[in-house]
Length: 377
Ligand SMILES: Cc1ncc(COP(=O)(O)O)c(C=O)c1O
Image (cartoon, rainbow, N blue to C red; front, side, top):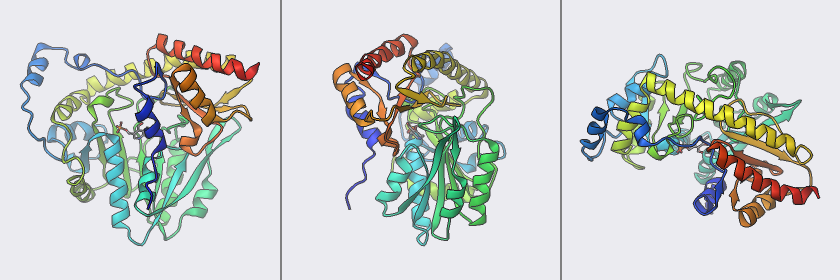
């Protein structure tokens, strides 16, 4: 069987370090280690860290720090992973293996296509659950979801706040999904990596605690601006599920990097975490003003629905502009990397990351304008 490629990541892997302007990144400008180590005592502690293997499911200190943010959980509900990518991989592999008679995965589209790609590569079938642009909003197709769920369904996988649209599912919408899933005894997987990066007031609702078959994946990569730590986690509904998933991680990365476990524990301390999220939201809110102005300038060629959270904006190009060709031309002629809608099964769209430093963002957008001008003339 041919490998289903993860086109979004492949494109970024090939280009992100070779273009002058990289707007394919979906997080905010990353923090530095020194931003976390603000006392000499902390610096000394990091330098004293012995680089052995770490506790393979995450140290107790790390899992305590994660569990604090999910009321009602303990360290035993948490599995620490190497990034959200490993969390998603383990959950998908586990679901596939544990449900031999349920070969179908219902998958929100558009989405970060990792979970669906892995499911297909394991031999499973993926059924889309669509978000549709309706009256200036992203609206989930619940009728389609109800029709798709059956005794063959292993799970419904969503991403909220959503990559690439920035759509933030309301508490009511999440309850509808959970209700549909529970009627059929189906798992819900919710990738909540952008939670904490809200553009609007208030934290994005979570599926946490809504149902006893819910798995949440997340990491420090987006809302925390710490992607280089490669630290993620799965929040499980019971210690039993966490133990089962842990056995799968023995085959993947063994343990999170020791330095990341230590620095991640620090970043997740309530007061530090609150400051990091505050910074993320500030970057996103300030840069959104730049982005919105730029979109308005090109309103003859594009439309968008403002994201509720995340540093990404999903833009519909005017009919007749081929999004794949456009992004290709952009990287070759202007050295700017953005992602085409094709990488989210949404041709005709482009995804632009706006979490970088403001000046860099403005220069990169100027380059995109140069190419767009050729389309409007
Ligand atoms: C929705 C979503 N989940 C998971 C990941 C992977 O996260 P990490 O960098 O923590 O592995 C990404 C990365 O872009 C993402 O957008």
